[in-house]
Length: 321
Image: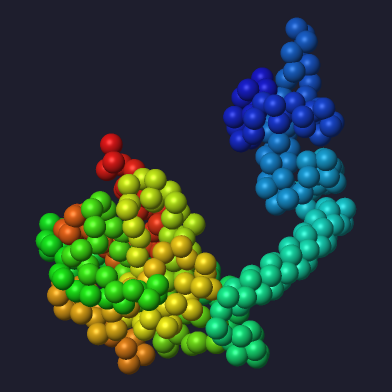
């Protein structure tokens, strides 16, 4: 067979097949016209090289496995030399993991130091035993439950925002119906964690609960882009008190204010969805786009929270044209 058919059947590129041959791993025969003639054994060898490469074994070190097949073994790893190849790859991988783990530990240490630099909570107060390290709530578990759209915000687009006055972390009071011209991004969230403060029991099992800090960091990182895309202002809103929110703003270096709605007055005025956790009534995560005093658009449910700012940014860019 020609090299194109070999590559197709082995699941490799023709360039890769030529490389295998240049290393002497494939040794095709020659036809009378000088063309290479590959057979079923070459297909088997190319497949084996591809599989071993997928495990992280360099192509150049696959020869012991191929030699094992050449002497008649059914499997390429039936020989001692093949097992030695596995061990070498494992040892190298272990060294890389150790190096990456050390770098990760150093990064976490730098992150905690930087986060506490502007925090009212000292590192010693935050955790004496490091049972709740910073990365636990800055990152998100892969198996978080996805919130479902229960229709709880379907009534909101097109209605005016109520004339509620809320306290900001900038020591000011604003009225939601007097935010000014243009679009306001108001993201509503349950609560933010902080060092030394336990989250409600079972927090990770509540759909849509986990992820307030990554969400805030997303709006921080995309803040200027949101303004460039047409947002006049950005606020976060929760039922936590202003002092708690202010610590978060300072620690995370947020370029926008948080609004405190401890009595959940906005929930009552707009019939916003809430949930119970740890004896608290908390807002479900959602985002309102308010334009000239009217709710123009609602994001609900919000998932994943660490990507939500980018979702809002995409919407703003799409609607600005």
